[in-house]
Figure 1 (tube, rainbow, N blue to C red):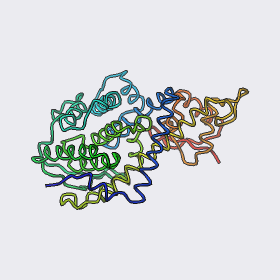
Figure 2: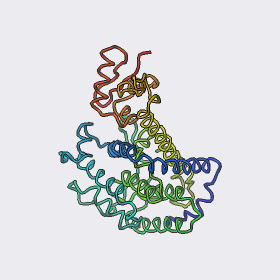
Figure 3: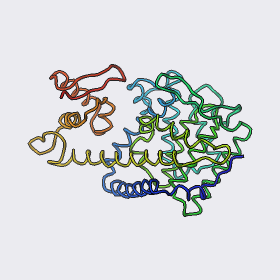
Figure 4: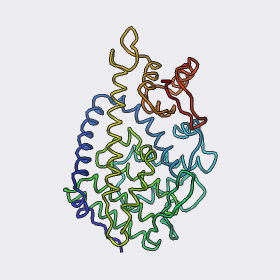
Length: 363
């Protein structure tokens, strides 16, 4: 049977590459703590945007989506779900909110994992929510055309509860031991959870929710302000490649955690860098003479000027959601009004339609 020893496994991961990633994340954590103490208002803005992005991205990875308007209304609980996709989106919203608000009181145990899974499917008709799988399943990956390929056959359903319990115990032992970096233990546990694939449905979403839970419980709050799920969606091909590389030999206790661990650490570090950039943008936008675009008479650029400046310095086409991510203090209506004005003036180009609409500065 698969064995879990995160203390021993962590010692083999401390290569220069992994150590460099850990050091950079630890340093970023300190900067974020300072920002949280000095400017909590900035973090409130980032949190609102991240919750919408996280709910959207984590479900879209699984092929679950709705319109941007409905998504925002669902996350803000202004409407009730009207179909199965929206029911699952609402479930993710609820669990994400629970983790955001109560992570200190949610330990990693099999019973807690089952409760979170139950809540993930609380709005849907299926009765498997809150229960481990009752039949064997496989891990598949989807290409750009939606074609499915079997990547890995997880352990059978009969031993799933014991494997989840052992993995939770190994994680607790690694934290209690005190010398294993929590980030390494988190990444290894999440990878093993994905390989166990303990549920009939919702395994991917649960893995991402548990990632946030464990990071928050260890004091790494960046996922609350910058959507890790969005970053994973953006690097989905690399995500699957890392999973595949670390999966080889898993059933024989001969797998290499490094590819997945370094991938996840890279996502966390990228989130940290985006946090620094967005906080800088928000603070500069509120400071005289330090914003983007041409300042007003008082030295502060208008929101319209900041949007135009973002398009000036962005070579690739970007969406309204991208602009909202980069400038989270600017409302959607202001973004839409500014884009229309720039289009009417012939200063930018509109590419695609619907959710695929992007905008780019004419060069």
